[in-house]
Length: 284
Image (cartoon, rainbow, N blue to C red; front, side, top):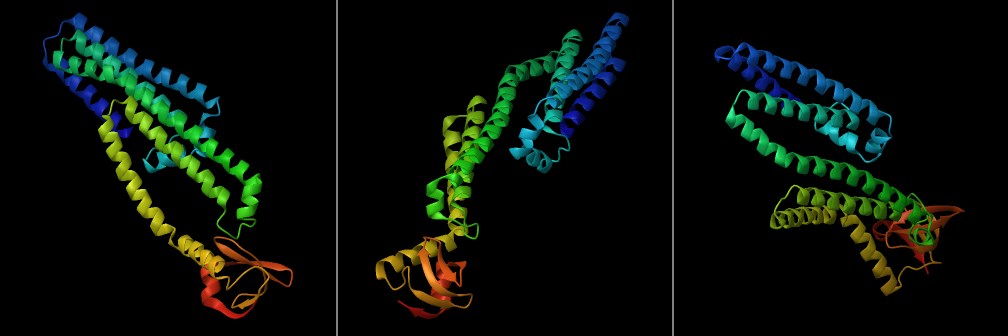
């Protein structure tokens, strides 16, 4: 936003210099001044009205929950989502004022450039709304999915303790991530980006994400592999007595990620890989 403001300020300065060196009539100068003053004041007034109307809604709270506010901070924008939309409205009005000014002064090149921009502006605005709405919806759907999955019997069978890697968080995060990707693709389609380019970006993004997931999930993969080994070899199973560096007791169950050990009434959740490397005594 700061860069857009600097561009518009430079345009106003260039226009003022043009008015000083060109042979304008008194009526043209008066009309130009009126357009500039009305445009500046009108843009600020409309922006304030839009800001106050948006502040009356829950838009900013939804933006915080959908991590939009955090994204704005990373983009070095200090305001809220309502402030951003109000600023965008103000700068759009400034652009229309510049177009009216250039048209009146018969500055054909600049007026044609702005006219071309106006034909593309609705797409840009709709794409921005799609990103905002899509991000909010994806975040809420992910949160709802997380709550439903956490309360369901499937989650209890997979993990009953926060000591493990909670499956409901993985499911909710996955749903949210898919929603974000779909939102970006919709925005790019609205902007008229070629489908081949979109597919290439999606392929690159998914490849990079897959590599990151594989690197980040290597411990999970190892734990799952060890649990499969336990099931096939039957060397360790539920009901066995085992002693490790952390605890000793009876094995309650073996999950794909960890083994639950009952040590004097207290449950310990030991990663399957640690069970192999740290076992000191084992009785079937």
